[in-house]
Image (cartoon, rainbow, N blue to C red):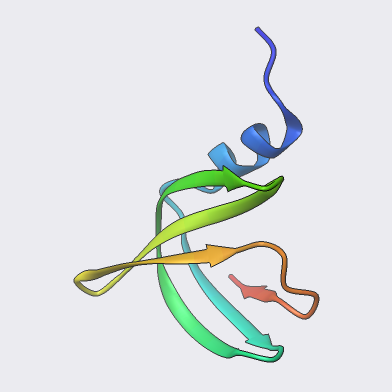
Length: 68
């Protein structure tokens, strides 16, 4: 079986609870469960459940940190 590296990496994140923090142009401090992902323009975009909401978090943030 063969799959892209981005798909492989993204699949490893599904089901994990992570804390995303970024001090880029749009500041972010979010903790939630990774439910799914999409690949959009060669970028992994995670679908994260935060409370009752689903939000999208892209991996293309230069200063993005993940607190475990």
